[in-house]
Length: 99
Image (cartoon, rainbow, N blue to C red; front, side):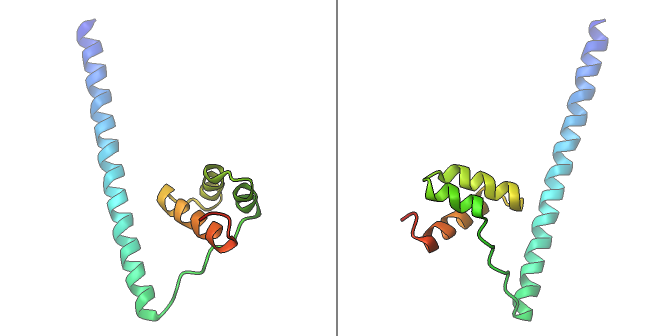
């Protein structure tokens, strides 16, 4: 019985390890693709369009709810935490809502 439990736990650890490795490889590939896309856009003289200001994000900023504004921005755009924070700070700066 103990041997079966050890085998099941070991198998679970192997599966989890492979999933982590796959996720890490996928993240590295995505980073490489993004870097290449940035080079192509720069070569073509294209700029990424400025994000539009979501009214709900602005409403949270007006209330001083900076973290909630970031959460909403991330939900709406799929941006990562750092990217969302930078974008929300830029929106706040343009509107004079945060120094």
